[in-house]
Image (cartoon, rainbow, N blue to C red; front, side):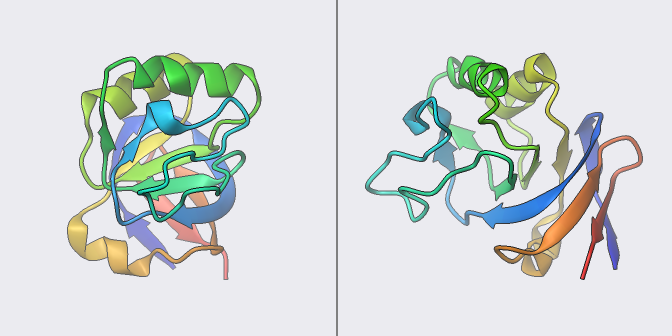
Length: 130
């Protein structure tokens, strides 16, 4: 199965989905890629090597540099799928060379934790490998 999306930062990545229905403050992610926010449903989970799915980033614009730091430390997500293309996520993905795509709200029902997908940020496609 494929779904279309809007490419924001070009690139291709394959990996397991990590789904959040709540926005993430990127500054709460440790250098090891662990979400450290007791109020967040993904608290204690690692984003490293995952395809991160979330509505959008919240907080300071410094969050963009956090994505870059995670990439340098090999603890970043392989790609990000978002509902709203915010400046923090887009600029962070651009400087870190992390593929980023934006999907419509109704397509979010297709995303489930653990499902393996290919994110194609060149052609605006997400391919589910079931």
